[in-house]
Image 1 (cartoon, rainbow, N blue to C red):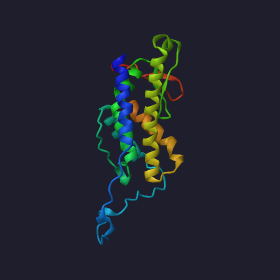
Image 2 (image 1 turned 135 degrees about the vertical axis):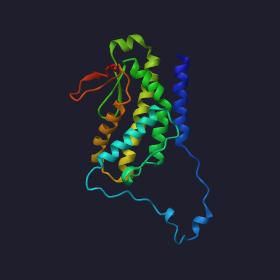
Image 3 (image 1 turned 90 degrees about the horizontal axis):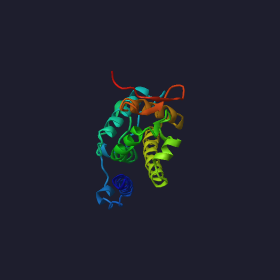
Image 4 (image 1 turned 180 degrees about the vertical axis):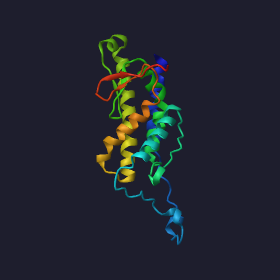
Length: 204
């Protein structure tokens, strides 16, 4: 119990530490005009006439794979010119990678499930309450809330960086949910297409 509490505390501190970076000193060379330095130009995302679903699926698959691998220094690819490697998206992926062991433990216990809106929810059943203390349930709630905040940072970060419009959020949430399902373990629960609880079957 104490070791699990310690791990949650470390993850929380990691998120706080990484989200507050000191201001950088002004680079005096920035005052000098750069005649032909194209690398200093602001990168603009391509203008899409429709949501780039294929590229977003590739991004989701890449991020979810690195989270499951607990890669705290993710290499974020950008297919079709999409902007992915922003501070907000990178921080969300890093903190999720640091937390993945706790998330999997919660899913393994049967006391949480993956929803098709891209979030993870606690199943507050009588069995869960009987098996845990009030203190442990508070710790679980803090951990799950942090996970969902980091997921939201990735989803909304993609929308904002690529000017996709907030109408794209629900589609991005489902794309990441589908990518995450491929890494779930037998016995873990998720939301089926009809909204019911389903369980990942054991490999035959």
